[in-house]
Image (cartoon, rainbow, N blue to C red; front, side):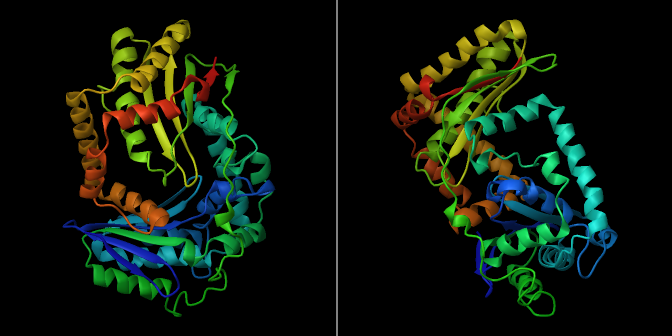
Amino acid sequence: MYIYHTLNNGIKIIIRQNGSNVTHAGLYVNVGSRDEQGNDEGMAHFIEHSIFKGTEHRKAWHILNRIDGVGGELNAFTTKEETCIYTSSLSIHLDRCLEIIADIIFHSTFPEKEIEKEKDVVIEEINSYRDTPADLIFDDFEEFAFEGHPLAHNILGQPRNVRHFTSERLREFMRQRYTPDRMVIAIVGGIDPKRAIRLCEKHFVQPSLVGQPTAVPQQPTVNLQSRTIPDYHPFERTIHRRTHQMHVMVGGLAPSVFDERKVAFSLLNNILGGPAMNSRLNVAIREKYGFCYTIESQYTPLSDTGLFYIYAGIEKDARDKYMEILHDELRKLAETPLSTLQLHGTKRQYIGQMAINNELALNEMQSIGKAYLSFERVDTLEEMQRDIEAVTASELMSVANDFFAPSALSTLIYS
C-alpha cells in the first residue's frame, strides 16, 4: 500500500512502509540531459556531481560524512529525463537523510575551487566510458537515432563543454529548472508514514531550512513541457575500433511510457532478450552456437517516445550468421502467435521477475519515484500483474509488427 501526500510548495511524496530497519529515500527531479541546450550539454550530470561539493551550511567533507558517518549511503544519478538524489540508512537516521537532501538541492553553492577539481573527475569518467565499447555503443546508438535532437545528448556531456562550466552557470541552470513542482520524494522502509511526512514538511517546507528558497523559485522559468518529439530515421553505421570483439547493436523506436502498447512491448522484450537464460536470443545464439558471451535486449521508455536495443559482443566471423538468426527471431514474434502454454509461461516468468526486483527496497524506491514523477500515481504489483495477464497473443504479434519490421530497425556495429 502506498501513501501519497503533496506539500504546500508542490513537492509530491510517496511512501511505502515495510518491516525493515533500513529506509531508502530519494528525491526525483524532472530534469535530465534532454533539457540541456547548446553549450549546456552535460550540465545536468555535472550538477549531480557538484551538489555534493558545498552548500550554504556545509563544506564537501561535512556533506559526505553526514550519511557515511552513520553507515549509510548518499548518492545520485542522472538520466535523459530525471535526476535522482537518494540515501540508504538505518531508519532511525531518516531525519538527517532528508535534511541533507534538502540542503544540497536547495542550497548548493558550487564553490569554484571544487568545481575545477570536479571537471577533471567528470572528464575522466567520460574517458573511462569511451574505453568501454559495450557501454559506449548504447550512447552512440541513441546519438544516431535522435540526431539533431536533445535526446541525442550524451548524459555525461563532452569534455569541451565541461571545461567551460562555471558556478554561475550551474546555479542559473538549477534556478530555472529544479523547482518544487517538478519534484517527488519517494521513501521505502521501516518508517512510520506520518513521521516521514512530518520530516518532509520540516526539511522541504518550513522556513527554518528551506521556506521559499531563493535559489529555487516556486514556478519554473524554463518550460520543460515544451519538449519536442524527435524525428527518427533508421540507419546503418559501422565504426572501426580497436576491440577484440565485434560489438553489434540492432534496435529502433519503442512505445513511450504513456503508450498503451508499453506492457505488451515489455513482455516482448523479455521474451526476446530479457535477463533469463531461456530468452529466445540467448538460446538461439549463445547456447546453440556459442557466438557470444553477452546478448541482451533492453527497452527504455521515455515521456514521448522510446528505444529498444539488442546488443551482443560476438566473434567477427559470426556476424552474418548472427544477423540472420536475430532477424529470424524478430520475424517469428511478428508472424507466429504464442501458444496458450507459451503465453502463460511468458507472463508467469515476467511477473516473477518483477516481484523479485521489487523485493529489493532500493529498487522499489527508485521505481515508484520515477513512476510517480511521470503518472502522479503508482501501480501496485497486483495491478501490474493484471495488466500483464490481460495481454493477448494477437496483441503481442501486432506490437511486434509495429516495431520489429526490418524497415524500422537500425544497426550500429563496432568493427
